[in-house]
Length: 71
Image 1 (cartoon, rainbow, N blue to C red):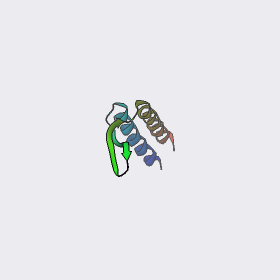
Image 2 (image 1 turned 60 degrees about the vertical axis):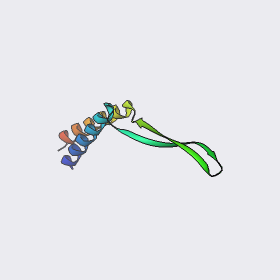
Image 3 (image 1 turned 45 degrees about the horizontal axis):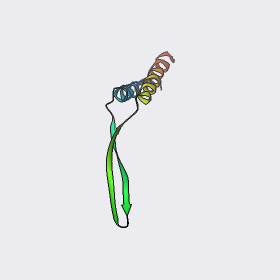
Image 4 (image 1 turned 90 degrees about the horizontal axis):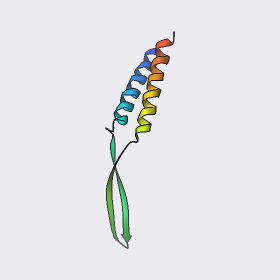
């Protein structure tokens, strides 16, 4: 159980760090006009907010610390 917590914490901290630095982007399709059978959509590229990455890093470090202290 201890190793699982440490590994999960390391993975979460690494993913959070990548999100914090702006490495995660996703594309969102947004329909702007729909008239009858005709529709127009726009693909909008967005990134994960930095605060989510920061929270993930802190939670990951907490998991690593908890796993390291457990007996």
